[in-house]
Structures are given as structure tokens and as C-alpha cells.
Image (cartoon, one colour):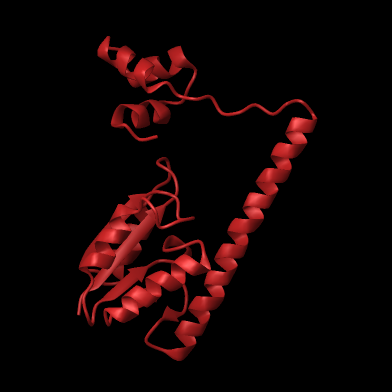
Length: 181
């Protein structure tokens, strides 16, 4: 009956420290973490590892349900998979414990609100882009040429120099060097 922790932040520059500490404090024997968007379960290798590893009687522990999924469909799929394995779900900062009826109900309500929040954010973003385009000030994000990044790195230039040279951020340089799109 292990407690397995899962922590997630959306971007590389966000910090997992608070979540990791909370999961350790909650008695998690194992904690897996990743820096990837929660809007989909695609590309979330650590989540897949946890779900493959978890066994009957184990509990998946997260700090908040939105760390697990941002869509009610994904959340229900994860909970269904856990239930099918005889495992439970617990959130340290929310009254979610799938071993109780109230915990299950609250989980579904929070899942609906997490998806609603994601949809509102997308709508606001689309409205902002449309307004910027109408005003003629919309500029698309610069695209990164991974070959140029690798070439400059091969010439011995550091990440900051490459970023300055190409007019991109250092994080984009690191992603290009790792082969991450």
C-alpha cells in the first residue's frame, strides 16, 4: 500500500519545490515530477510511468487535481484507470479522496471547473490575438532554427550568446539543443 506522488508544472521555468515538499510530507514513498502542460495526457511520460507502476491498494497523491488533468475527460480516464487497478487518488490541498463518496463527487466538480478555466483562458487568448491583429500589432512568436542553434553551439558559443545572436530566449536554445520542439 504505497503512496505515490505526482507533481507537475506547465513550463520549464516554473518550480516544483512546493509540490515535491507537500508530497513528501504526505508520506509519498515515490514521487515523480515533470514540467509539461496538463491540457492533455499526451507527452506526459512521468504520469504514464506512475499509472503503469501503481498497484492494487496504492494511492496516487497530488497536491491539487489540476496538477493531474485540466480536462474532465482526461481526469475521468485517469481515475477510471486507477479504479481498475484497485488504486485510489488523494489530493493534499483539496478534499479529494476517491475512497469516499464525497471525495468522488468533489473530484468531479473540481474537474469540471479545471476544464472550464482552461476553456476561458483559451477564449481570452483568442480574443486578445484578434484584437491585436485588428490593431496591427500582433506578432507571432519567433520560430527557432534548431540547426542554427546547434551550429552556433558547435562553434563554442554559450546559450546566452546563441540566444542574443538569434533573438530568442535561452530556454528556446536549451530546448533546441535537447531536440524538444
